[in-house]
Length: 179
Image (tube, rainbow, N blue to C red; front, side, top):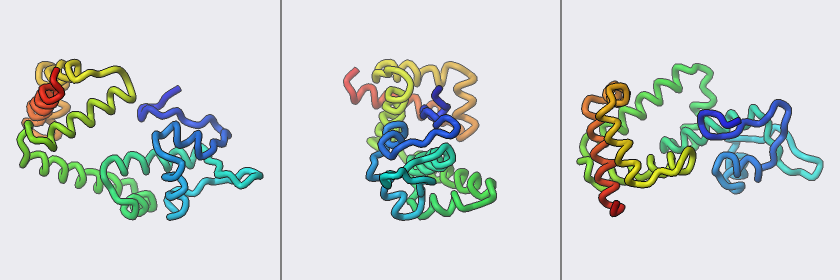
């Protein structure tokens, strides 16, 4: 079973090695060792041979770390967020992060390299995690964002004009790819 983040959770009581965890989460073993070294993610157990063993609880913490890293947060800030006992603090930070991203995008045309790079990163994520998504198929998906009122509303709830902006960035990226 794969969760909504595209990762297979550990079964209750299962212990995973660093290699198994790295493969499931798309990180390197060296990254896991670094997270251990800096105290961000310490495996709960060690094997008789001294190998790191990760529990289900460790994987849940790693899932948060991976998401925050993808949002561009530095490790020190991630540690602060994970230490915050109040979920509201995390939510408030994520809202500020979202506003920061939206304000940066507001100053960029959809045809800018940065906007097209963001569209390409989104396309690759869908392609790698869910299904084959060529630039041409992504173009059709972008069209749906403005044609389907439900999709449009999802983007417009974040920022007025965002659905059209995302569609235009996807179109420009597909053009750049030569499709």
